[in-house]
Image (cartoon, rainbow, N blue to C red):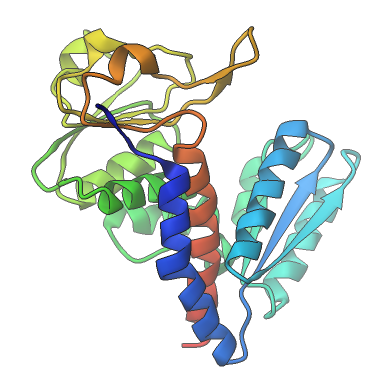
Length: 283
């Protein structure tokens, strides 16, 4: 029977054995980690993600706050809010929930957040350190994937790792993290020729392309570990990933489900980054 690599189960384990004790240790020093989420506009998906972040923060006994703004808020007002958050020593982490209205520059927003409070891991300084293998606040989804692989006992050193997708949020940073873990990494994308040739070689296959059920049984080798980052709602209302789960599940060693796979670990990584930022504030 296929081993399902559950993000929900891994998240609960990480919270209980790692994150909650670290929060308790910080509280003993008089510090409570605090995350602020800046939410602009009324997007149902964004609101759902924010609720998940608040729920996980509660599980770790840390503080979280959502600062809501109407879509008409100006870019200057958002940047001013971020500058105020940067200056507030009681706040250890801040994220701006994406997407934002078109009149607000995402690069300006990300560069305004102080690197040591950039718990999404998107600031250029943190991305640079991640690529160089230096300590930093890492992008949450790639960090969550690495935690899942580590907790599952997957051996990365010397493994063939194939990443399908080259986004700044997932594809590029997860390729860097896998390389830092001594895997042999191939990055595939929309211009890759003979995709199957590459994916068939993968001991670890990470799919982050945003195309529903693109990867099927023909793309994977027996015994591979498959991480499905995609999430899509089909016409029948059901959710699926970038991988055709039913055709692949009996071939591979481990596979993440959708939902309940990478998603919970992304949120846990955000919480862990906030705790890490709080720890650094007292050292």
